[in-house]
Image 1 (cartoon, rainbow, N blue to C red):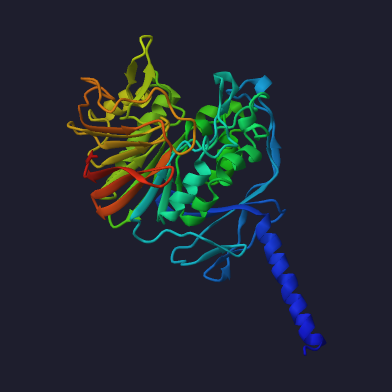
Image 2: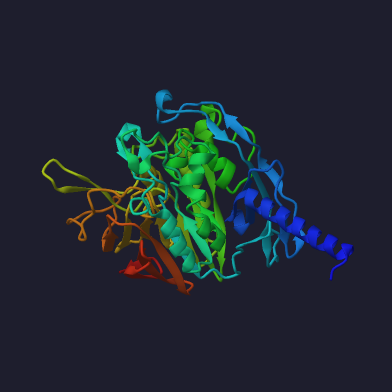
Amino acid sequence: MLGRAGHGVILGLVACLFAVAAHAKSVLAGYVVLGDDGQRIVRAITSEAVCPTLTADGAVLAMQVRAAPATAPLRKTLSGPALSKPSAFPVLTCEAAAPQGVARLSLAGAALPLPPARIDRIVVIGDTGCRLKASEGQSQDCNDPAAYPFAKIARLAADWRPDLVIHVGDYHYRETACPTDRQGCAGSPWGYGWDAWNADFFSPGAPLLAAAPFIVVRGNHETCVRAGQGWFRFLDPHPLIAGRDCNDETADAENDYTAPYAAPLGDGAQVIVLDLAAVGEGQIAPDSLQGDQIRRTHQEMTALSTKARYTFVANHKPILGFSAYPDKAGGVVMRPGNRGPQSLFAAQTPNLFPETVQALLSGHVHLWQQVSFATPQPTQFISGFSGTLEDTPPIPDTLPPGAAPAPGTVVDHFSSWTGKFGFMTLERRAVDRWSVVVHDESGAAVKRCEIVGRASSC
């Protein structure tokens, strides 16, 4: 029989276990994002007033407050004042940089993923939020897993056991309230605060956040007139500083741009991340602020691309891909890639991208697509089909004669998969050879492709 001392030890252990469980429950999200030069940044979102306990190889690693709980004042948004509300963030966001050489990370007792020295298995997802947009008359049935399958896709992508996840942008789509007569999204949170961010990304994406670190690309839904405040609090891999938080709309032009950075994949490969989500389809004046940002993006991307033998460039809006819209006769009109940066990129190099960039990864268009060229441009992949209401009309399997995503390009190989949800995987075969698989929402492979240097085929 146990004496009083033994009973005291057991009661103490039980109390400790309850405390640990309560602390873990208060961690609403824990994840790792890769920043400049592959810096491993641990983030935690908690309902507590203090940051949770983070350990690195068993030793406590102090977390710093990134953003305190707050309600941001109502600012100008795309939705207009009648359909907007202040963004409430009743949560504490914490962060810490994991030192190089650390093998194990644990947040409030739960293991966190770290990238291996050589990253060979990559999941690419994009456009994952549930669309609620009154001004466009579009409402997705967020409560129906068949209509909004991101949670299932995240679980299946996690089961693939990736070393890394690249999200090519547009995490947040619940901008306005669900229509009162639509049961499929009844009760959904909306606006740009924590509740909508959690419903759109952190809660359904939890299995994937636990499976691998993320490279996060900013989408046009994370610009300052939309969910930019949450982007800076939760995902942007750079320090959060006052004035660079999308709270002041007079600073939007500066806050809607971030300089390129690179994350190594090991063994001669890397990913360069571009932030051009705010750049539209129209002509950009070369002497404007945005023109200068695009020019600097190209110059810095070019410099970074020389630091590896194989370079993926990840940006949200595809520069060398296609979208489409229906014409009055019921046909399909092909729309070229993002024309905003094209002319300014062409002014830097006639082929738009330097020869040291081999492949482009994008989202924005709600489908999967592959484009490879007979002319000297990098191959383009679009993976914007992981949860958001799909695009219509579908892009045809065969391009119309002469279709080109940018002036001076000649398409050699083209493939698309539209009208359905899924995720894309990349698996390294050699430094310049990668296998691509398109998975549907049940995880089955529906397309297989190969990348060799700058060319790809499916």
